[in-house]
Length: 219
Image (tube, rainbow, N blue to C red; front, side, top):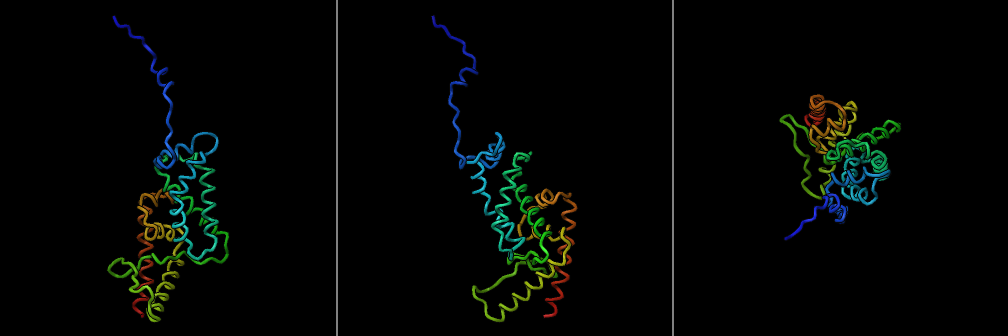
């Protein structure tokens, strides 16, 4: 006659070694969770998050401040803030939006400290016409003198148009048209309602279109 010995499941579970996946195999969500354990963020998990999102931070800062020579220092400060505050992130799935908000807030903190800073500009910025929006296309890798002058003139005008926007409009238009973020992400980053985001973007587009159309018509 066979006899079975009942063993508590907790005892069996305790005898099975817990296999911890390497950081590069973890999802972004799990990396954030691992960073939120313990007194300090896990160094390996945090390094993996940095590796995955470093280019994102650099892209955000480039679009906001293409002429700043110290963007690398700003990027480093972004990650310092992330390291210090990642435990406060209540929704790990929204890490990317939270990271963008830190980078954007840092940029505007620095902008307020500087007396003379050129407004944000990017070659990726859209061109606005009467019938809507289109990309500014450069036909050749090495444009001729006339084409180069026309391009510089247009971007000078776009540069000034963006500079004339109120700060809240400039932030939303950069995040939407240049960074390509969804309305919901922008709402989270800027801390305003979805309706407010859409309203600001619409008004920013209208103002840019009006100013740039004057330039285009006068050429």
